[in-house]
Length: 115
Image (tube, rainbow, N blue to C red):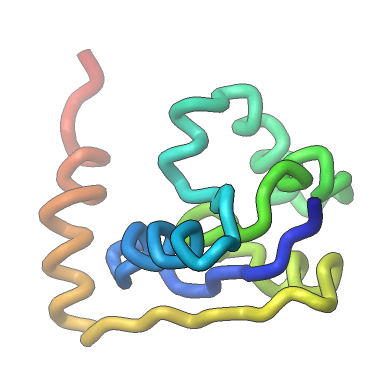
């Protein structure tokens, strides 16, 4: 399997809906941030890429036809270079509405004390 679709949009821009649509259109399975909770072993690989270290994208995303949302969207340029046949989709949202949405979800979670 090889990545065919790369989502370049940030979270809270309709990426979960895009994931569902891509899977319904036959581009599944689709990697989404929610997969990290199912595959905690992916964390160190994402950290390796974030540190600028080279790695094998296929070892991380080889079982997927598409990747959307964070953290894949952060690496859309690298993924597009590694998978040159893949199409890139940019999802967007009004900036103020995006901030309100992420502030009330992800940022709220990040501000919560860990117990």
